[in-house]
Image (cartoon, rainbow, N blue to C red; front, side, top):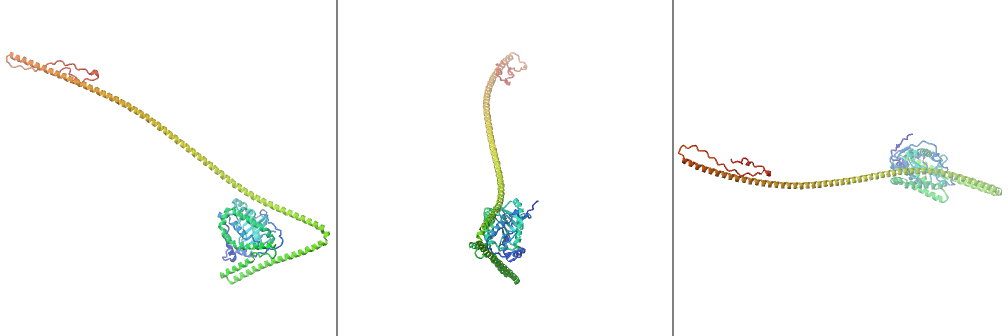
Length: 588
C-alpha cells in the first residue's frame, strides 16, 4: 500500500506553544486553544503526598509488541531538518526539571500504576515500569496525545497524533525507511498514551508509596543520564540545543527549582527512615499562588466582580480539594497505623499461643518455616526466572538493537567501502589518465624530438645540399671563370690574332699601297717618258713635213706599266681575301 507523506507546515511541533502555555493556562487571556485549556483545568488537581509503608509489588506494563493491535501511525516529515531534535530536546528539559522529585500521584490502568508529574502549566509526564526500566510519555499542556514516547530502545516524536521522527538509544535520527517500518509500534504507543491520558483524567488518583519511589528513583536518574550522554555524542542535537538551551532553561527554571526543593525534602525524610509526616508535595501551595496571580492579573485588566467571585470560588474549591487530599492522606496514614497496631497485637497473641504450645508446635513451626522458606525460595526462583526472562528479553531487544546498529554500521561501512572503491577507481582512472597524458606528452616530446631531429637532418641535408650546390656553384663558377679565362684568353688570342691579322692586312695594304704607288709612279714615269718621246717624234715630224692643215691629234695613251709584284696569298692562314684587292691584279 502506498504511503502518503505530508510535510508539516511548521518546522517542528509547536514548541513555542508549550513555552507560552503557562500564561495561557493561568489566565487564558486571548481565548485561543480554549478547549485544551478547559480540559487541562478540569482534569488538573493537586498533587498527593507520599504514603509510608513497605514497598508494594510493581506490575510491569506490556512491551510494545505485546500491546493491543492499533492503527498504524500516519507518517509525516519535519520541514526543516535542523529542527529534527526539537522533540527529544524538549522532552529532555521537561524530564530534567521534574524527575528528581517524587511523582505527584499515580493511578491504575489495566493493573499497572504509572507515575505522573504534572507541571505548573499542566504539562504531563507519565512513567510506567516495563522490563528493567521505565517507559515515558510526554504531553504538552492540555494535549491528549504525547509529543514524545521513549522506551529503552527508541524515542518516537509525534505531532498531533502523527509520527514525525524516531531516535535510537544513542540519540541518532533514524533514516526515513526505518521510521516507516516503526509506524506500527508508534500506532500502538499512541493508543496506549491516549488510554493513559484518559485514565489519568477520570480514574481515582493514588498516592505514590515512598518506598517504591526510593527504589525506582535511581533507575529513572540512570535513564536520564543515558539520554544526556546521547545528547553529548550527537553533534546535530548539540547544535540544536545550543540555539534553544537558554529559552528552555528559562522556561523550566521555576519548575526545576521547586522540584529540587521537593527532592531535597524527600531525601531528608528518607534519611530519617521515613519518620514523621511526609513532605508536602510540590503542587500543594502552587495552585493557590496561581489563583492569586490570576486574580491580580484579572483585577489589573478590570475584570467584572462576578468573574472575580467565580475565580475566588474556583480557588476555594481547589483549596478544599487540596485539604481533602491531605485529609485522605492523613486518614490513609491513620488506617495504616491502626493496621500496624492490630498486626502487632495479633503478633503478640500468636507469640503467647506459640509459647504455650511451644513444645507441640515447634515441629509444625519448623515445617511451616521450611515450607515458607521453600515457598520464598520458589518465589525467589520464579522472580529470578522472570527477571532472567526480562533480562533475556531485554538482551534480545538490545541484541536486536545492536544488530540493527551493526546492520546500519555495515551499511555505512559498505557505503564507505563503495565510496572508497569509487574513489580508488577514480584515482586509478586519474593515474591512468595522468600516465596516458604523460605517455602522450612523452610521445609528443619524442615526436617533437624526432621532428626536430628530422628538421635538423633536413637542415643538415639542405645545408649539405646547399654546400654541394655551393661547391658545385663554386666549381661551376671556377669552371666558368676558367672557361671565361679561357674565353678571355681565346678572345685575347683571337684579338691578338685579329690584331696580328689586321696588322698583317695593314702591312699588306701598306705594301699594296706602296707597290701601287710604285706602279703609279712607274706608269706616270712611263707616260711621261712616252709623252716626251712622242713630243720629240712629233717635233721631228713637224720639222720634216711641210706645213699643212694639222691632222687631228690623237689622244695620248698612257704607257703600259710594268706588271705589279705578286700579291701575297693570306687565305692559307684562314683569312679571307680583302675585297679591295679584287680586280687589282691588272692595271686599270
